[in-house]
Length: 390
Ligand SMILES: Cc1ncc(COP(=O)(O)O)c(C=O)c1O
Image (cartoon, rainbow, N blue to C red; front, side, top):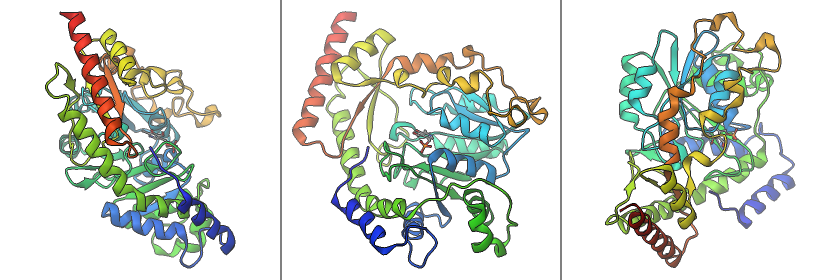
């Protein structure tokens, strides 16, 4: 969900006219965005990068996650979450989601094993995970928590911004997110050392001349530096964000309130007042009902979105962890004790829930009459489906 207007065009034009396209200069747009996003999240350690996937890889690597480690991921997330684990050299282990469409804390705990180093709760579709329970379990088992907030930009859990609650957080600013600069990402770190490692992971050469004297010895990495175009767009997008979120949250609450009398089960929300409000989700009795409901309300069956379900993550299921076999985590001897059999039965419960759950999207630009129309469609569809089944 994003809105782009003349302000973004003017901001990018200003960068072109200034001649400062590279991020390292006094008063730069990237640095200004990092400061402002840090204020929004109430965490000082923010670093912009090229994508959400890169942000996840940097977050994992900066905390020392790598070969020999398992990282628990939910069965429902964009494939990039699991692939980022492989790119860090570790092995993803798939846990179930529950009716909230986010990580089931009980399944997370059941999957903790001798090699578990971290968990990635994913705040999917603007919904937020049950962070109290996830953090409590993680702390008890000494497991790191890395939040994938790529789909929940600006959302919060009980008043705390997502991405700032765990040991590290990752955001995406690609074309589909609440704030976009076309492509982009950000890493949130818990302390200065992790932040410096992230800076070096994102831009090793740049770190050598800007940050090397502050505690972390420069090491080799790729380059995923953000440009001033990205920073300039994000500074405008950030101004729009609070208003957009307020409108989406209000629309979601109105839809829920005006369909509450129906024989319909809304998916449990872990923080309705603070999540993004970008989707209203209903858990239907079965897959056939979900298909019919989705068609009538212009919704989407959660299990049919493409690459968001473990059964579709072919590089994971096929054990193709790298183009170079010598760098493939599935073939690395350090990972030989990690669990990597990916039996579909392990996440069948997630598939069942996803195939009987339907999302209806809100939009910050919706007029009251458009919301009326959505509510009417939901009411009619729910009654038709109930009449058929009784
Ligand atoms: C949950 C989730 N994690 C990670 C990513 C990866 O972000 P990017 O496309 O910016 O690499 C996405 C992208 O859509 C996502 O939805």
